[in-house]
Structures are given as C-alpha cells and as structure tokens.
Image (cartoon, rainbow, N blue to C red; front, side, top):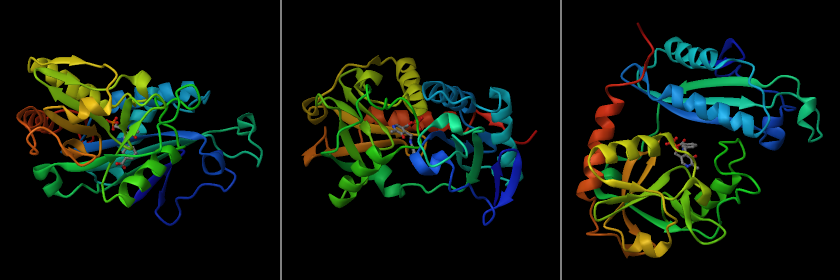
Length: 290
Ligand code: PXG
C-alpha cells in the first residue's frame, strides 16, 4: 500500500508522522472518511467542502487548494489500484513544540490512506441492528462543536466503548438536554407515517454526507423530510429507524434500549432507501481512471 504524505508516497512501514505533530499530541487536526465504488470516489467534492469547513472552524489553513486535495485523493487511489475501498484523508496541525500553541506549528500535514473497507456483516443489514442509548453525552456545541470532524474523537470512542460493553455495535448519543444527537460514527433517522425525521445539526449531529444524500432520495420518493429535536420517546414509537454513514451506508435498526422498533424487521421505507443509495453509489462519483 502506498500512503500519501505531503506530496510524496510511502510504503506502510515508512508512512510516519512526528511525535511532535499536534495531531498526535492534542488531536489537533481534521479528517474525512470517503468511499470509492466501481473506480469512482463517491461525493468527493462534498467531503472536501466539509474538510474546508472543519479547517476554517479550527483556524487551520490548508496547504493545498480544493482542487489539489481532490487530486491527491484520486491520485492515491490510482497509485493503489483501488476501485472499491475506504479513503482516510487527514490533515494534522503539523509539527510544533510540546506546548498547546498551534501557531508554533508551521505547516499542516496532509495524509491520504486508500485501503480496503471493513464492512458490517451482511446479516446486520438483513436483520437490522439492536442498539442502545449510552451515558456519555455528545459534546456541547459551545465546547467542541460536533460539526467539526476533528481528530479528537474521544467523545465518540467513550460512547462506542459503552455500546460494545453493552453488547451492541452502535450507540445512540443524546445531547446535554436529552435530545437525540447521533450515533458514534453514523447519523440516525426515523420514519413516522410519511415523514422522515433526523436530528438537526444544532442537536449535535454531524453534517453527514450520507445523511444529505438520503434526505434528497427521500424527498424524491415523496416523503416529507424534517429535522426536529427528537427524544428517545420518538425513537421508541417510530415506524422504522436506520443509521447512515459513509462506512455503514444505510443500515436498519430494529431494537433500541430493549424496545422493538416498528415490526422488529427492516421496514419498507428503509429497504427502498438502501436500494436507492446503492444504485447511486454504483453510478456516480469522481472517476479514478480515465
Ligand atoms: N456522525 C459522526 C460522528 C461521524 O463520524 C457520521 C456521522 C456520518 O457522516 P458521513 O459523512 O460519513 O455520512 C460520521 C462519519 C469508520 C468511521 O471508520 C466513520 C465515520 C467517522 C470515522 C470513522 O467507520 N463516520
């Protein structure tokens, strides 16, 4: 595997960052998780847009333009002969001193890893997930805004530990007011009648790329899409529930905190969205090969 670091390619063993990089010392940096399908990078422009928004929010000046970062991602895929896989794009604050001061870091590092993807087992998609709400609440947006896709993922990792310790794959995270925010690496949706509902960004949700795509597909299918604050009560009484994310795509949820959701099986709206999402991922994206 060839890993891109600041314009050069390195083998897996040689792809290294400094112990003085503030990405390592403080989680000071940003990232994107992107997928390639059939030789095309899905929603690449949207991912790079979000990277630039994250950068702006943490006052990190990217050393490359939008077009140059897109090219670095596509070139790294080509270099690795990737047609289907997972791309991790990372920008660290760069090498500084042991103190917090980010202005000591003169040059951010851009890293691109293009690898195979670890998928959930197919049975999870057929049967649906059984998930729980966890005690760790989502970061306050006034403290560390969950809209920033930063290298500081401990909030999510603590929630993930609680999910795994509770025997589940994913965790629902509430915000400090008790409203549903999102899962540790996925956005959450419910279907109620002809409505598709998902928490607003202000509740602590990431501006998920998959979330946006699914909202568009649902509108095209005639559903009313809204972003109200949701409580656990709303989840328990939903007709259907599913999660969205670049890794998980669209995955049904059939049980929450021991309560069966809807019929306890993946519902018709979820199934249709899964199919529509697949046909989109298989037919669009930034070409890797001419
Ligand atoms: N919420 C959070 C907190 C995320 O990290 C999503 C929602 C979904 O967003 P997208 O844009 O992917 O639809 C994410 C992103 C992984 C992995 O390896 C996945 C994410 C983040 C980090 C790692 O599965 N999901």
